Image (cartoon, rainbow over all chains, first blue to last red; front, side, top):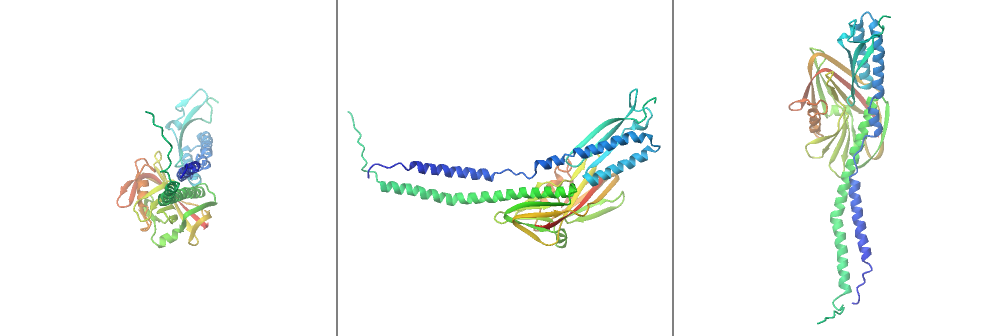
Length: 144
Length: 266
């Protein structure tokens, strides 16, 4: 019945602190973020090389077609091939169109060296959609 | 007048103090047992379900890599806790009238065709919780046992190109040689050895494509698919719902790619 021994109060308090801390940690752990897609996959999904391939093909085509005696047939066949190939390989829709002035002798866009033709490229694989208009010089330079 | 307070400890009992402290400790333990344990168990179940959602998205991504990136084999190691994963074969789903899709489309400008796809699924069923999470037809869908409604956790990669008026549909079916289930840590071995079948139809004017979803009665994800079709996920305005379970979109060109993924073992 003598003096109250309060030396143990620290132990009780630390016990409470540790218990509260563990509870808070458990809550934080249960809130772990939901991430299923890795960075590598996101990078993979941007089809840089596929777009470059298609662009490359169209640019080389653009400079060869004008010499062909039957450009429309060849152009349609080429368009069909590109569309099929990109769908089966890359699951992508691609199309291109050449503006109406393409086959006119004096194109819409010209300078003293070349007639230029506008090619519109469209690419879509469900994630990335890409559209581009580019000007291609005609194969035969003017006055050469 | 000055009063001197004398420290009188005659009313202080160490025994009563001990009883008080002891009571506090016992009360604390009881409160933790009564409320803390169930709260922690709930947290564990929900974190298990979240981890499985994440695992299913990883699986979905691996199936995507198999089908879309022309990779023939793919292994995924996953830890399944608080439940198990079951594989439902596409032909098994066909035999048992399971989940399937009907697609009605024009083959050319005059004839229509109906194709039925049974995708099969890989399904996680929680033991202690109520979540059911499923990878089916390229999507991750989730529902609660014994409750209506479902939600799409991760979309399939269907898309519509506004410029070309082209709808691209990927139908992925799962094949396995025998019934399989996985609990604990395991590796899911998948392969896609048959090349995809591509159907590609172009129309001179816009033609309707009608997709019907028929759920497995015990495993109903119709709400998730309805939300996906009618929402802005494939095309901004969504498909037009044709009650009860069909969805319609008019397109200039339709591409359907059929993939078959073999589950070699889990």
